[in-house]
Length: 290
Length: 158
Image (cartoon, rainbow over all chains, first blue to last red; front, side, top):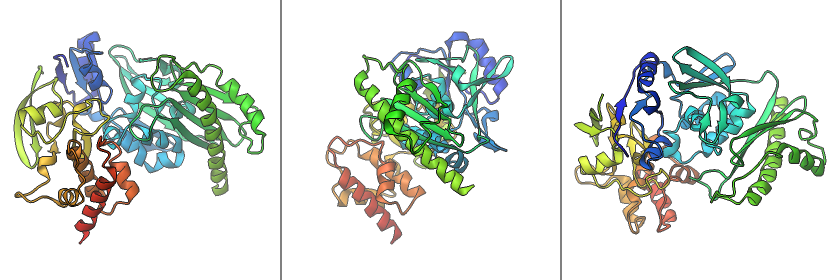
């Protein structure tokens, strides 16, 4: 790792001042599970590393207020995995968070960092897209709120600009019953990056949303309002035809060593059908309870 | 602040005041500055778990942490398990069941298992698999390692 200076601001204002003073030479550190690797491999060579973890405004890191949960930049994957409200209302997000790395990684890696890092294979991207998460960005001119579909841009790129901090993610419990499920394909169980990530949600009026990643430059969100995917009794070939449309933009890289494009495309369809099936079951459970 | 940072931390129960380079990982400082070479460097990308230490009760990959981040915190490495020259139940369990083969991954396995048992003294086999899922053993001694953790948990209850 190249030399850098280390800053540990205790307030958001102080952090933004440090970032403003450092310009493009600054990197923000939260969990460090991506940044430290990037610095060691000299993919990133910051002059200043700004550690966010002592910023008072980031705590408590996970807060429920009414029907909205706010996860600050300090919220770890482990906290996501164990939060009762997230398991109840956003089980697909809990599944995605629990799939990240290992216990050691999840104890450090943050949900906001997973999105700000901009990896097309980010496990949390599909459930956050499918649930219309909002990214709260702190900058010199105050806070702005960005729908996650606009925030995610491409490999390593987001709507986060120089001098800004990915401050939090907001998720609001849907007003109508929604079943959701997460699926992922890896070469092995345990620590591995995903070759396909996918989240499906099904609501009580038959709208199915599918968000999928690791098969193109970014994770995409698509929707099916025909009611066919959401119908437990629809024939498999009708569903398959709709899934073809849903996945029309998938373009897995030929250069990835994790899986070939053909295999990823084939598995995308398998995981899509599987996630929809599980989402339907979860919706039925919700409706049975309510 | 500068490229060198003064930190104070508790490592294996002892207070340390250290000047650490900002670009040194916790793993670098544990091994090279504190001389605690039980913690191993292997993949340095957070995949193998050989460098696992416990920070404030939580297992973490020390290769992915900057050393400055432990300022004010409590760190346990494998050297912190034995007390007064006596192995703890986990170490004894690993020995009794021949869990170490080449031994290189064992400090990391022990630290993940230590954090598990602190949190959950009565783990199921699935709990052990989950807790140690981030620790690779190239000798593939997983069966003995899992049995050793379960045996230590049992010994701890008696």
